[in-house]
Image (cartoon, rainbow, N blue to C red):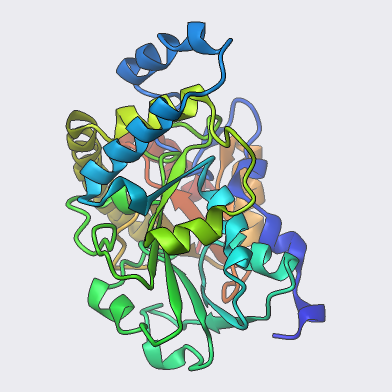
Length: 346
């Protein structure tokens, strides 16, 4: 796609801008309004430490915890102030030509374009399954999501490994991988030197305001990504949150949450489909991609009813009739279904 035809405002769009205070939120994929009580207590216990700079010991403890969680050496962990920081680092790999698979989260493409990196959009057609042959042979950086936002498609790990080529780095955005029970297609434990896996703690643990995440990859690649970072790139509370949520008990809790999400997702698919809404399936993430006639009108109607859903025409390959909704529990879905029914969607 020619650079002068790229709408960067759409690439910058995120679901949080669609949510006003007091609205029922189906637009943002964060689970819950706040971290669980045990995590809040653990963070609160560190408030008295905020008068000191974050310690190297805390950072190393976080790296060890993440390494243990994924079966990686701590040197294969780069701690991040949210996954967005990881995307902003990608230009430091100095790719000659990047390929970004779409429809998918737009932040990686924006970061690469802002740095002047040539980007090829690889737009997958429904059912949005990965096709390694569609990726240009000359791309030395390939970026994709798994499960993919907003399609909720989970690509087989083998299909991602099939993208590997000499001189190419593959970046897998696994921001929602812990919302899939068992994480069956995750590459987080794969030590291949040309694979980078990005994880976020924002979604499952309701930490959007704290900004926590990490890269997993070969130490030499992580060193290139982290080159030029300032001292103390993460604060004490961020380091504490990363360490806490990597514990075996927290991982077990996240898996229980993922199992509950799967039940709620199946129920949502059935109820929305019963209204005549086209729901993309199979879906494996904590969100669903919808297609309805006059989708933009429906989104505005629901907003007037106090319900926020995510416009999806900002994702390359999708149009104004596409919408994304977070998976929610029965009570919230009752309100959504009633509002859509009153809008008489067909």
